[in-house]
Image (cartoon, rainbow over all chains, first blue to last red; front, side):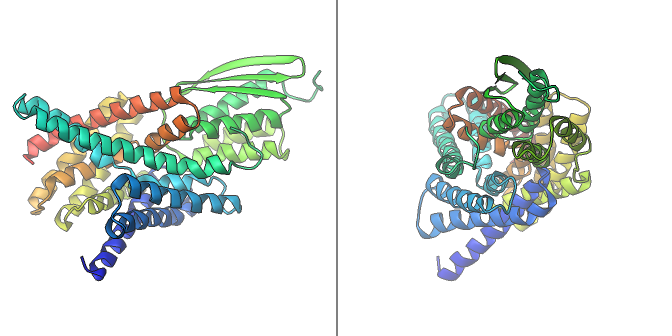
Length: 161
Length: 256
């Protein structure tokens, strides 16, 4: 891929990541003043993930972890400075486009396919299912861990867990 | 010994549980619920606060001097309502900083939740449609299937709200919405000459993926709340199973 193609792919992913995050922001009844920030958080998350996968050549869980960590740190810093009341909202909504929902659905789809294909193709399907579900679980765990890290290192002032 | 104008422990416990269940039902993680209840109770004069936060119930144990009180409250269907959570967190913050009293906090939470601002349904459906279309583009969806995916997801969201308002079983709603959204997206994509109908059908059902619950599951596990994390994970798996049931049925009908 040429640099131009990589750059336009990153822009494409960032734009649609932002749209997805802003759309889900409205679905989750996010305050109106935060919808633009949701777009920015989603765009930042997808930019980071695309750079990590396309440029640095990281795997999906590694790229998702780094992307979610950057969004969570930016969000935490924003909250710490008193710009947003419920800071974690932005990090969660921003990371929604990173959630491998389609991968999870595909894994279960393969599970249903086993019942149609019978035992002849069963073993091949089982390995595909295992691969997809493992990738989904590890990616989800990576995003969740990355979101929790800033909060665990620097909990909100005057509050205890 | 409490002064005559300070609230009873029972009253404080009820306010804590009210705040807690609104937060949990609004998509907050266990840490947010626990810290908020702790701030609320301490702000109202409790010396010791213990919170046991579960998927379908919250238990609070409060102590003030020689007095002690334990109370349990049920939690309803978990969803995501960030504005609802924000309202409660604002009241908790005011109590913690001593700017409002118990009765004012009670009235504020009630008034705010009764008249909680929500986006109009058409806007929510439009936003959901665009979000799923954008998800589709992220997954490599072609432009021919983009509009059908947006329409399918928007119709799915309208159907979800309508069915939930009529108290239809949640998992039945998931399967019906998934089937309808995938059928519209896949059928529309086929009519317009789309080439990746499988992606189109999956993208249209992504409105049902419980993203915040998935993330909260891991956050709660890291926070040392394994019971809540496991309950969330089980629910997520159930939702994905029922979603896929509708999705596979629509795909077989379309022939992808």
